[in-house]
Image (cartoon, rainbow, N blue to C red; front, side, top):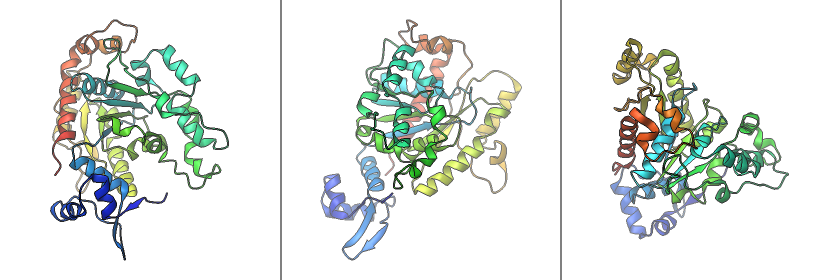
Length: 356
């Protein structure tokens, strides 16, 4: 993929300032992107990196957060959905939840199975996006505007600021073929850029994009990470569920270096927490940042543990029923509500704190 380059004049036009202001930014702010090349006409920058910096400087950036764990059943989807709902309803943010997991749990938690089946038949899911790229000789069916379901949630018949880009179980059969896209008749296509390209027309509409990733570090997850400004690791505080966290952090860091763009870990959130010795011990290790291999000399630093931990509760199962008459988050999440709300506020503070 050819990098889109721009000079000082183009940066000034994009930011709505003078060329002198851009020159001042370069001197004043240490985190202003470095030019990738110096031509006779002057330095040039990567458009994506400069655009991200300008949006952050003006307080207009879209925060894109991937929720990842390599093990299923750890409350990843419940946590991602709850954070998306509370950001939209309580914080009054415009939020898009992207379901990249072929299990479609986030999708059928936010819309009815009948609605999902209709959208899937009509090619209005994330699977169709990837299928179009796998089969470039067939006219594409995916359209981002019609694929986004508006005003979704089981709470109060939908939340006005919460949208959904649904997944499909068809993605199970497609995901192993996605890495081969560059050899499917279009050698300039990058399989890691598919989601980013599709979202370009709509991404600036949202304050937050929450991505529910599949339990793997394959191409589908990397499509989510490619556009992420950070990631969250939900985990049950036991040995099996936390086993792959070091691998996640290591692989994300390597991927971030490959694309030349930081993808920081916002933190680890303990989910389905019970009062027993094992959970207490693992949470203590997480708080001390000495979980497993993270505690070894010379190892990578462990991401911090969020202050709010999510208790095990049976209320969440009822909350996932789109036919249930649920009017409040308290009714949907039961005793886990306060913790999920606290977690959402933690995430919001981390994302919106001043960077400059």
